[in-house]
Length: 215
Image 1 (cartoon, rainbow, N blue to C red):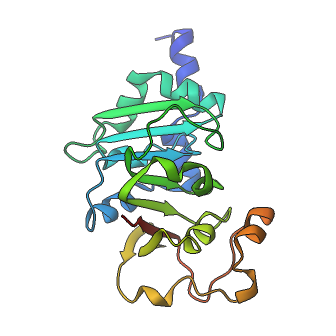
Image 2 (image 1 turned 135 degrees about the vertical axis):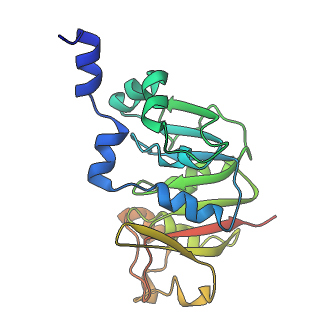
Image 3 (image 1 turned 90 degrees about the vertical axis):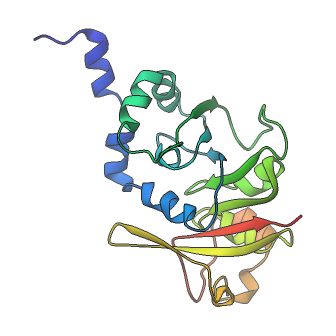
């Protein structure tokens, strides 16, 4: 049967299913997170098409400037269909997309999220810390310096190191003083990290790090 133009366009445009073939399915990361914590609301900045937080978390707000991401999230039926069969009970109850630059102030209330996600993007912590609720979690890696900046922020405490191997995720929450030890201590300088836009190397690296906001 010939496909309608809208159907053909939908199938040929970017999707979470095609995107995760290139980055891997991160759904297991959020299932691992739920073994330790129970966030109900998350802010995923620089998200592009990665729907994996919605497989485990009830309410997720996605932020990106990419027009393809905006078009994808605007098709609510398609988003729901791609999540079908992939979510835990109670997950994906609310999915919001903001076409915005997270480096600028967002139209979001302060202290309104249990979890902020900044993977392979940044520097998100400097601009998005305001949206994290007290005792909330910040999940970041060091590709753009986010985890390295978070490690230097006295408001944050490392509570987990995320490891990824053979497609599986686990979160190490013990002996955390082994992590975030710079190979070159002189590089642990927030201004240098911001200027370079890169994270620093650690003696014991992890895929990502989970910090908790004090207070």
